[in-house]
Amino acid sequence: MDEMLLEIKHLKSYFFTRKGISPAVDDVSLQVPKGKIVGIVGESGCGKSMTAKSVMDLLKYPGRVAGGEILLEGRDLTKLSEKEKRKVRGEDISMIFQEPMTSLNPVVKVGKQVREAILNHQKMDKAEAKKRVIEVFRQVGISEPEKRYECYPHELSGGLRQRVMIAMAMVCRPKLMIADEPTTALDVTIEAQILKLIKNLCDTTGMSCLLISHNLGVIAQMCDYVYVMYAGKVVEQGDVFTLFDHPQHPYTKGLLASIIHLDELPERLSTIPGVVPNLMHLPEGCAFCSRCSEAMECCKTKKPELHDLGNGHVIRCFLPAEREAAHE
Image (cartoon, rainbow, N blue to C red; front, side):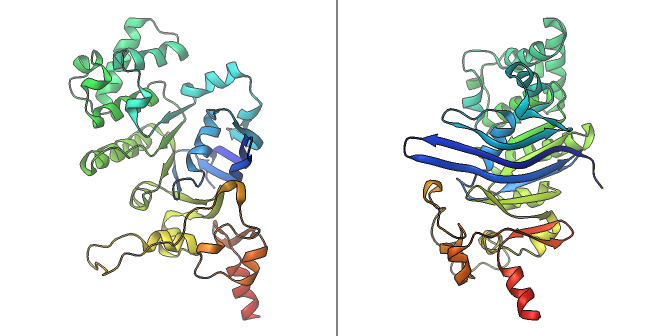
């Protein structure tokens, strides 16, 4: 049994607007074992990034955590003071964002920005901190680190900017790294290098990683365990081999069917019809019902609960119960 670093229990993160309440994350539970890479996958708007921002306490008004627990080594982060949360951010948990150009300060040299993370969390003078930054720049594969230290963000390529963000996330040696679509804006060659870098850092430092992506190929390559999210809820979870070899939820099957295989190019690409529903106006039954090819009458009026298929493979669907009833 793996020792857990992060445990999220029944997390509810809502946006309270004049038009109503939007349940961006609705009763989500997940676990990240020590030294493992756990993935969250799903379409845009399904709650992946909101889950990550809830862990980091980065939800902006009118969004806030409305319920549940976020336990880091048994310590509930939702109960901490703002000062304690700032200490956890960067020191114990760090985050890599989708687009580094919007995350880095354009008028401050990148070396100084990374150095600031050290000075905020560790007792070091500026000279020691600079030495540590250059060491980490070298560790994350930034060539000529002394020269890059003095560069502004616009003077670096997209791949180098993302490496700077990884260096900033790594510089205080956190226990957990959250990577939110870390390769979205990069070409495939640089994407492969960044993913390999993150995996190597986890392997060599023992750090855990929560990887958020809509790319199933990235999830298959990187993760030990996967959570599939739809409309703010986890609809399927399991180890990466089980989930990719034996998907059970119609949504997961649809996502996997949409992947193009170069050895068997179809005449027509497979798609999931429809769009993710408006979270303020969710259907009475299953949120995926209107897009599901296997929907039944009960799906229209009842909300499915999580169903354990064994060996950690869990789905939120009525199909397993219907199949069990048919065999009796």
